[in-house]
Image 1 (cartoon, rainbow, N blue to C red):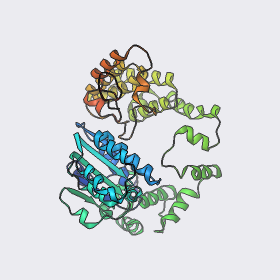
Image 2 (cartoon, helix red, strand yellow; image 1 turned 90 degrees about the vertical axis):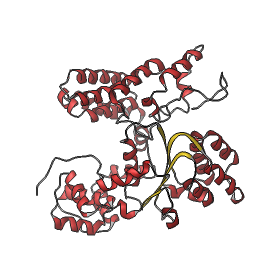
Image 3 (cartoon, one colour; image 1 turned 45 degrees about the horizontal axis):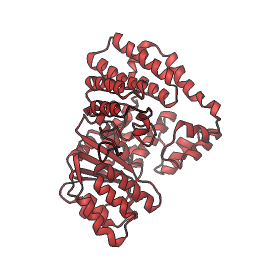
Image 4 (cartoon, rainbow, N blue to C red; image 1 turned 90 degrees about the horizontal axis):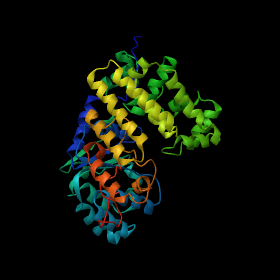
Length: 440
């Protein structure tokens, strides 16, 4: 059977990409489909690939937690978009039925200074926290400059999907068609015959998680799992081939939506002295890759370098940034690719100047000149503060430099590029000095 070079990129059909473009203009976007239809991945990738815009994006992942905690996290996000409205909602606490009208009014009358997108993922986990009146107000809002995007596994009332200004994508929109199934497999290096595509479609109905299992099963064994039972496919393809230690690790991490390398190491029973087994792998990869291979796979190299930063290997991080910068300058790359790589590396190098905001800002401005848009390795959900609760913690570690640091912030933190980075400090600070308020 003909094979092609495997492409590890995520697959999105032209049809779905075209539908998702409606998010940019719709007042409210509702995407409803069961788990495994790729809702979160599709919307994340769509936002990540957008060209620079004078707008902000807020992503709230709703998890199973007590109602008061879910409501407080929601209010904190609203606070970032409209501080007075968010403050009032927080002061109310978890609203009861008698307060639903007041909550609805606050949500409908919010004002955003710039075009803003609020994404609420796994909305079904927060829906029961307060009365539907509040959520309907958010979806039917008249808020200036606000676009709301709701991702949910549960059905949405038909009346909501038909309202003016609402974009609705349902389960059928998220399925892959037969022609798209063929494209999906071919991207992984497998060209299917028409009868095979029909067989896969019968077993999956275009459900992306089932398609992924069918594809992985075929790549491993040369045959398709002859079952539509997702649990059986998962067991045969993903579970049966794991060693005992791998199974134990998978069971331990499965309850978590996300985890760090350090947390994963702890769950694997690794001691602190073993944690560099991870950084060593990254360094071995860099050491045993030629200059030509690094340039040819620069996107992957950029990610490896950034992972060295996360692993605490700051000296190696700085060294590899300098190495790739030199390769980019000397390499025989097309001008557009050279600018892209140099821009990515300028942004990476800015972290080596931490915490000198003036030097970091200069490198970020250079990155913006070269890139023009959002860097590929920063996602909308990333935090710029490296896990610290406030930018004040990062930049106010020296006494007697407040005026100078405020001036540095004013100069360096207002470029369009910096404003694309989530949680990047915006000029003023929330504390009682000179100004009555600040924005974190």
